[in-house]
Length: 503
Image (cartoon, rainbow, N blue to C red; front, side, top):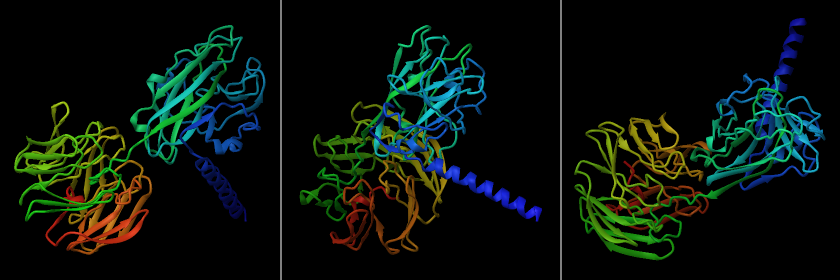
């Protein structure tokens, strides 16, 4: 009986722990733009309870479980705290000796932080959703609330973007305040206004924390007020969109006559003679006008029929190279780029500056799968090797992912509309698409047959790539918003343009 009671006790404790964890994770991550100035004093009414302001997406932590020596550089304190903390309904910063996080109902109400020998690194977290946004801008006013003490009260701004809300933070050096207080007064206000690094872009759960640390001497209360978070809506990188309406166009290249046949979603049908049998089609936006340009690669020479800048021919590459045009520097224009299998080297030419660069990444036999996997607007070098993905992300660094089989066809694209290309494969043996979506997670969808040619693209303009296959002159599209449709366009031997870079 005693053993049973003990097990029941542990099970009860475990259930409470799980409820606590779920409650913490369930707190809202607010859409951007987001702001709060704490004038509503009903948001926090009880010590250590943030549930009332849960919909505001703000939490405070004491940092008592973060070992920090007094005077430690706040920028180096990156671990998280697990101790929720707030002292509610306070009225006198000079009278509150205990450190941590407090809500002061004073003439200009605010949330405030103060370090101490027990509250080593107190902070508040602002929880926002930065999906579809770039240039995340954080602003706040840091207020000196103490008229008595005089300490060097540092302030650091940091962020993290893990969906499970665990792990260390990343410091933002530009936002650091060496001392936010001035002895004997409570009038100093130090503004923070900073653009977070690109790593903060495009996350369903972005946490921005404002932290102080235990100072040498008697710490002071500092208010964190007038918080504003904004961002810039990122324009989805449209591909295979020849008329610039935001929708990929059903289109084919016919090797037998070098003709491009394009069923533009806004401007209707057009045909362009540009190329010859044996050419590799390389459609991309080379002049930055938002329209895909007709282009071919022929034994090391690029022939571009740009919609704004007109025709040009450029020698860049060799006959063995695999062309991979993409925007590697986020200037809105595709660079000329080739992958050389013999050496596993990428060569890139910026058409605007005429600057040349190269990167060794890959080996003979790899399939190049360049795309923007980290959502920073820059194409990343990537290769597919027998079911393994090797990606050199421009902001987040290298990653290797096992996803697929040797015979699969890699079809990376942004299938969930979060601004990041997703690792994905089409398996001809069963006509199934397997998607490892960066926000929406895994999906396996049967759509196609063995002989189909995969041609994923955003045909309905909702920012999400759609499943699509080309079969003997017929297109079958499973659009994420507009639903299924079939389109007769092309002949059996045509090359579907949205399949141009599917190895």
